[in-house]
Length: 502
Image (tube, rainbow, N blue to C red; front, top):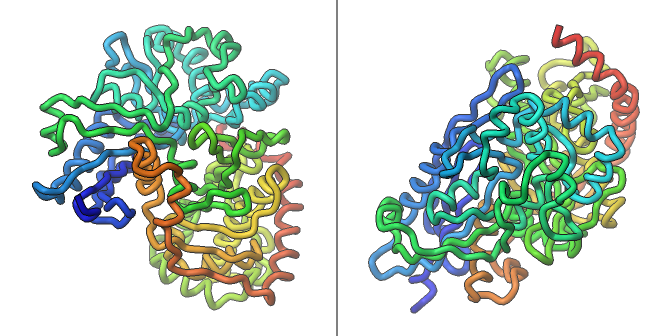
């Protein structure tokens, strides 16, 4: 059967939407479809989703792309990428007793801060590689136990969103190694759930899923589910991995000298390594892609959401993002001495402070919307550069970047990135990194390829942004000031945060 007859589906279960992409065997996109769902937030820091909404989105997106297949086409398999750190509590029959508590949920801040600042907390981080933050399932479980003990006791099974989807489809209770490694409950060296942490939480081993390889395959759909998705009941479903590590694979950032940078609402920069190294200063995370590939990186809350705040709240929604960028392009590098700290919603890497706040420094009569717009983009980029410095301390020099996410539509932002990092920025032609990574893992799982390094054949570069040396000295000087100001104000965030809550 020719290549044009065999197809693969990659599914990415994201925080705001699920996307399915239908690929040819060589990674060309034939069809894609996205279904969005609500993220419920309130002033307590809640950020939850309805499990059923996400399950329906998985079914709906697979259905939408499988409708492109003809009678003679063969669907070889469906692979999965999924959001990290989600948590659902379920009853004996696996019916959810909670909604999906997502990574963005901040209600466990008190529990996370107390544990992180203890000796036990540092030891836990060194064993698990997952930062002790409100985002992590470990902190969420502590919060449930402390603040909602009845709900905590009522739960028979804890799971993430992908476990929920696979349980609905196949009746299994499993979790792939990649997502397990991002829970804060996984012992990197022993390669299993960390029994000391389970004891601390008062959870028995049978309340957590069986950890399986990202290459684990499920099949045997019910006729009803198969018909809803318009696929054969014996279609192979491959467990796959977490969206962060999967993104490195999908852009072919497979060596420690090549970083994968994604900026959407939030952002992350990661490099691939062949063993789980953990940053002793606790600035970065360490998560698995599979048994022999790990990523070390840092996630920032401060991505395009900060630009959206400037557009909506400060510029009263009177300018488009495009108009803001066009204005900012006319301002020289350094924004006429205006510096912006982008910590509007607290921050993860590199400062790991949920009480952090944003600020403009150096604001004068000479500064207007154009300077503010450019300073915001520069500030977000300085913060990501700080994460890269932490990475380099652990894994050595980064020499180039593979960039994906909504921000790659901004030439200005990519040039600022190249200039601050002083290195080339490569834009992969396909921006479907998570879904492409999912089909690469699936092809290895089913023996079609022998090594995931074959992804190199499927990733082509569309553009390279080269750094402009004439901008280096300005950015180096301002970045130094940015960092000095941060060191000073970090000691005051907690007081400001407490004042806000009065």
